[in-house]
Length: 186
Image (cartoon, rainbow, N blue to C red; front, top):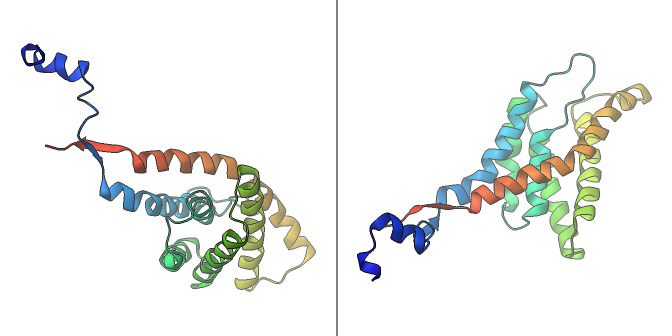
């Protein structure tokens, strides 16, 4: 009786649209890198005139991927991604390479010591890491740390910390796309 059904009805009736689907290997291997690169490019279009308000989105997406999918990025991923961010952001070349690699090492040590995680812990970790990153980027850039300079950077730090849940949501959607099924095989 199944053979007598015409093909469109047979596909709908037996879930044929979902059978024989595999994950796309290029999506599984590239979506996280592409989102980090796009995050590094976005601040180019959101320049602030007087004070830095735009958070370091490339670093925050990098950090979000590392916190949400710990084994996805290799330990050396901070080097090429940081180099791209250095070229795009205008920071001295090597600053993001150093800071992103240091972040990977620090998060690996933290993950080894405290293997449990939750959203609140990830948010605290991301907020503290972004705070340290912005302050370290100021030091590496050669700026003289002073009270007026810190007061100018406080809004950027606050926006970065408050933006983490939105970035976590975007990463979740990108991860869902990364793991979704591709076209039918055969």
